[in-house]
Length: 288
Image (cartoon, rainbow, N blue to C red; front, top):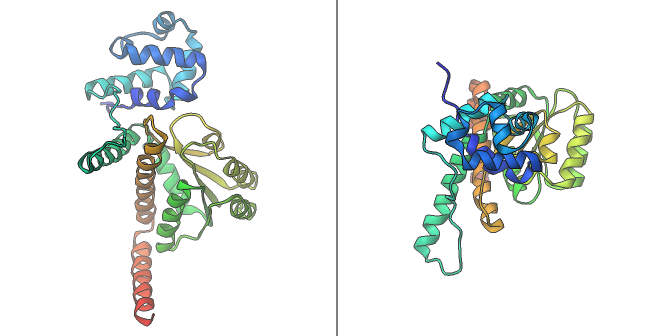
């Protein structure tokens, strides 16, 4: 029995801004007629949306589906779970009470993680974990708010004795990237996927033969386009202010998933390293 796939409608919503005009046209038709679309052939959908069949195939691939059939299966999964895209994020305004702020911020963080589950590929996560586990060196890149996520990942990897360096600005990123070799990995974190300094640094690492893994918002973007392994988060907030909060929570959730997976690949050694680092920190505090 095939697993019930889902996340088609959420993927369309998240990727809408990055789609080409013709792809956006058919995407809008799908969002307006999801129940109808799951029973349509590619020829009929092309006719109703006034686009070519090739456009529908390109849209499916832009949404990281193997083809139109998988996209329909994901939409059907959404409908079976009553996951029609609706505005579930709650904006924060100047007149909000403390109670409203608590509820809206908590709601947004929960929704951000739930949305990410629909666009985070288990296959890509597995590949990322295996690649990071085998890496000789790991460079972790992030700028601004994403730099905080990078710091968290670096700290976690260090605790389980994985050799890594962090770059939160172009000079540091470029220096790390220039010294990476085949068998090494660079992990780039950028919510927008548009960070120019990171794009240049990832290109250096890629040219040196290092594997490139990225974590960005869902959709086509320059950072993700450079990756050998693409990981995505999904946040649909309309406000830039709220986007910097819940997107961070979604990114941290993905980092935790990777960390647990990597630690599991070297379970005994990871447990030993965690205990050794815990004891070292305690001794340092007592002596301080």
